[in-house]
Structure formats: structure tokens, C-alpha cells
Image 1 (cartoon, chains in turn green, brown):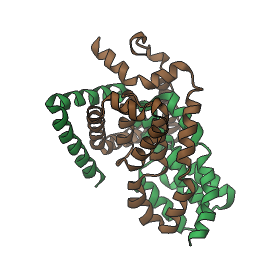
Image 2 (cartoon, one colour; image 1 turned 60 degrees about the vertical axis):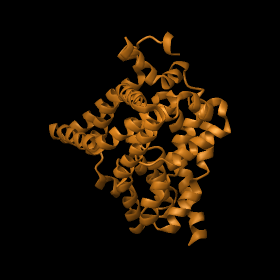
Image 3 (tube, each protein chain N blue to C red; image 1 turned 90 degrees about the horizontal axis):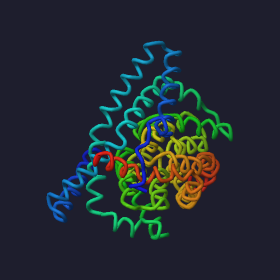
Length: 164
Length: 197
């Protein structure tokens, strides 16, 4: 589904490029794509190998066991740690968060889990951000984002109380 | 930056060294846990990750390339350069919240924008906004799976982080070593140079 949407957007930009600059525009866009690929390919392969190994070291069952039905501040810390370590896209993590919530985990730990997965995910950071945006940017963004999951875990429950 | 930059020896590339050490450590742990089977499983996982990501990655690279044609450096610089100030930050954040697809789309585009002259403030806003709130993720995954109260409460409790991140990330970035700062801006420039040689 997302892939078709993406393909549609690429097709649309292709048409816009053709209208704006003709075939030479398409060629120069393609060259930029190739240069981008050249500059990150080596890191991308290493990152994917690392993601593959991480899945071996930390299988999903282990991760779900960790969060259990902890609540309070410990629960928020565990939720943040789990969110940081869990590999996978939204189709894996959001349903997992929902099932943990249904199984009895508090609003705080679940919010901390999702926010940690959004802001300081281990595999996505080393696999994607580091190759494309470099060490200085990646380090700065990670440092600033580090407290966000905990803060989300603390702030979400009172807002949730207002909404239910 | 560009011209004065010499081709770096691989062992001085800290990003690459970090990645190689992490991979070595993870492989060692996998080997200690499961022996050779662990390593083979890791390899198999990698192949399936490559298969899964390849189509979207290809589209992401194409999109990033075309975007540089539609928005040449002059325009990106004016809209999202360091001189653009708050306007650049708002454009970056809006682009981040609306951008579709996963990391294989977002990071090529961010790298292309950075190469095209986008400032650190705009790129920070783009990346932080993309991480905190994405329209696509909210409507397709969070609302249906988490239910309205939880999805909405989590979003309201975290939305302000986009502003905080957009302001603080550039501040911390400027504290990084000069060489690392310039490397971030000239990754594509370096590949261009290597190809020209």
C-alpha cells in the first residue's frame, strides 16, 4: 500500500521534472540519485547486516517478556528501553504496543515505548541516519531526543485521563 | 568545503569505524549465543531485510534525485538555508510530518536537501518532526490500533517536542568537532568528487 503511494509520488515528480527540465532534468536527477547511492551504499550494507544480527540477539518474544505488566516509573523506563531496542516498522511496533496495552501495561509505559521507538531507535539510527546524515548530526539529534521517551511516559497519562 | 577536502583514508572515517565495531560486537554476541547458526541466521535476516527494503529504497533514491531537480540548491537555500530562519524550520517540520514512507524515503531526501543547501535547523526540524508525528503513521497505524484516547493523548503529550528538538539539535550540532560538521554537509559532494577523478 505504502509502496504504491510512494510509486505514485515518484511518478508525479517524474512528470513535474519532465515538464520543468525535459529529459536532461530526468538524467541529472538520476545522476544525483546514483551519487547519493554511492555515498551511502557501503554503510547501508553494514547497517543491514547489523540489523540482521540484532534480530538474532534480541528476538521479539524476549522483548515482550521484558515489559510484562510493569507500571509506574519503572514501567516507563522499561518501556523506553524496549522501544529503543525493538527493530521493525510501524506494522510491527504499533500492534505490539497495542497488545501490550491490552495485556495490562499502563498508558505511561506504552507511550514511552512508542516514543522511544520513534525518537531513539537503535537499529534505525545506525542503519539509516548515520550513513545518510553523518555522525555529527546523528549524535546531536540523539542526545537531544534522549529524554523524550521518559517525558512522554510521564505526560501522556494525565492527558489520557482528560480524554477518557 | 568541497575542493580543499582530501579523500579520507577508511580508517579515519569514524562513522564507518563505529559501524564496523558495532557489527563485530553484535556478531560476536550472536556467535556466543547460538554458535555458527546464529551468524547464519543473522545473514538470512539481512537478506530478508534487503529484499523488504529494496523496492522502497530504490524509489526513495529516485525521489530524492528528482526533488533536487525540482528544488535546485538556490531555492532550497532560500527556503531552508540557515538564513531562512523560522520559515525554514516551519517548512522542514511540515515536510517531515507529511512525508510518506519509511526511513528509506526520509533519509535520502534529508541527505539531498542537506546537499542542496538546507541548513541544520531545517534538517533538524524535518527529522524531529518526522520522528514525533507523521500524518500517515497516525491515521493508518496509531488511531486504529491504539484507539482514539491513547493515540490522541500520546500525540498531544509529545507534539511540543518538535519545537524543542528543532531549537536544540542545531545548538548541540555546533558543539561537534568542525571536521565532523563539514563531513555531514559534504557526503554527496565527496562522492561527486571521487567520480570526477
